[in-house]
Length: 69
Image 1 (tube, helix red, strand yellow):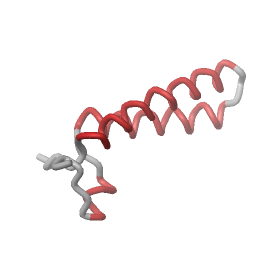
Image 2 (tube, rainbow, N blue to C red):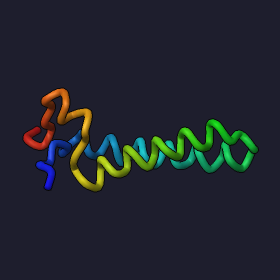
Image 3 (cartoon, rainbow, N blue to C red):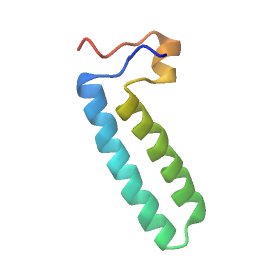
Image 4 (cartoon, rainbow, N blue to C red):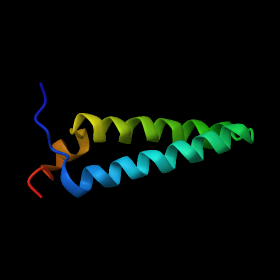
C-alpha cells in the first residue's frame, strides 16, 4: 500500500520518542493535566505508528527516505 520511508536511526529515534511521549502522557494525566496528557498521548500514537509501519506522511510529502541510511 505505502512504500516504506522510515528506517535506520530515524526509526530508532521515533521509538525512543514514543516511549518518552507515553511517559509524559501518563504522568500528565495522573496529575490532572488533560491537555498535556492528551496532546502527548496523540503524539505518541502518531510517532509510534511511524516507527512500527515504517512510513511517515510528512516524509512522503517532503521526499525524505531514511530507509537507505
